[in-house]
Amino acid sequence: MSQTNTASASIIEQPSKTASSNLANWILLGVLALIWGSSFILVKKSLVLFDVLQVGSLRIFSAFLFFVPVFIYRFSKIPREKWGYFLLSGLLGNLFPALLFSYAGKHMDSAVSGALNSLTPLFTLLIGATVFGSIITRRQTLGIILGFMGSLFLIFVGAKNSVSLNGYAVFVVLATIMYGINLNVIKKNLGGYDPIMITTCIFMTIGPIAAMILFSGDFVEKVRNTNDLMPLVYGSLLGVMGSAIAMMLFNKLIQKTSAVLASSVTYLIPIVAILWGLLDSEAILFQHYLGMSIILIGVYLVNKK
Image 1: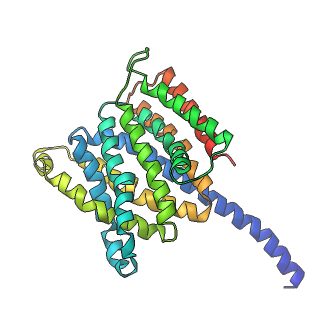
Image 2: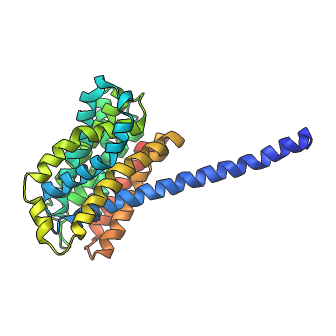
């Protein structure tokens, strides 16, 4: 084949590879949204048998077991001086939020929890500016204000077509604040390390804590005395899919594209949570849709280039 034909073939082949790569990225984005958007309904289904502490600790313990083989394989490459940051990230980014989401999920609809989760990038930016010295633009400030307005709509929505305080939404907001702190800690102190190794070490630090919480109560007794093990399945899936696999996919998406595109999964999570809520006969009111829309607009403004 001549040089001209070879160059032509390369030009023709390149767009095809680019299109294929873009399609793969969007598929990965959709899978992440499906996994994380489904986590709220899995929390609700797990709470049928287990209490709040058991669901949250079961989620972390399941992810811990998933990462044990990875930890053994990569043990020699782990930076020992970073264990303190691994523990801090594990507590703020996984264990405490898992318990808070479980507690909130017992008292509020999964669709609302999913929408409030969209506050994570807002708090990430706000904490980054106030604590870690990041710069916020006017557009991003507007996005933060809109995000808070949307969250207020959801916090003050009751079960009926009237506005009343739903205090349990505060636990979800607190979890997103912890997420915001955690992301800034990782960016500043763990940024130069392999994401899979980081995720593995994080769960190694909090897995034993979750195990102590899980097995200190009547968890084993409940499993033995029930005829329906589906809550156990839901809780285990919550950990393996929603914590372990999802975090690895998210890190892979960041490496293949950019943090901006990866963070757009936040826009899709509430939609998945709403669909699951509707399928589970949850009441979705006009105030819910309004609050969710305002939150998503705010998140869009924060992440917009």
